[in-house]
Image (cartoon, rainbow, N blue to C red):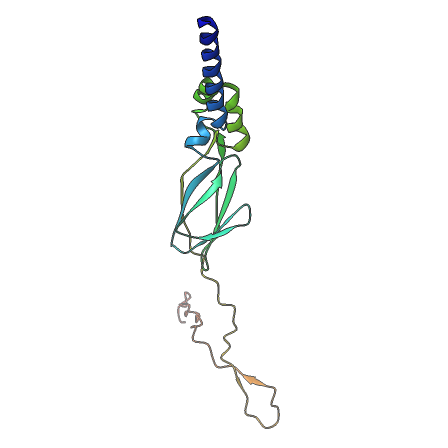
Length: 177
């Protein structure tokens, strides 16, 4: 009878351990990392619009949550500044090997939900470059209409203020005779 009770106790302990593992099915990394990563976004100057590859837009400075499992492209835009783009790449978290050792096949859930990955940076700081000054293409003619009564379509253009070079006198090399 004692053998039967001991066997039953081991069986119940085994069931309890298995149930405990099933309750924490996502694995160790899911419990500590989650499937998303917080990323801080900032720009100089502040107030830039950031568009993430999924189409969502944010204004700097801010912190957003991005899925760990995929790469992301961030585009920073602000009026009067050139557009800047940054990329966040996804790679395997170094702790995944420990997760596999501790959880065995249950660690595959961390692969499936993305918690086995990490993004390349936790903060993205971009310095925006001002756009070059646009050339003034507006005509600035100082021409005034002629006041002649005979032809009203003639324009009188005032003289320019750019000096015109005058030829210098050449000395007479033959001398006077």
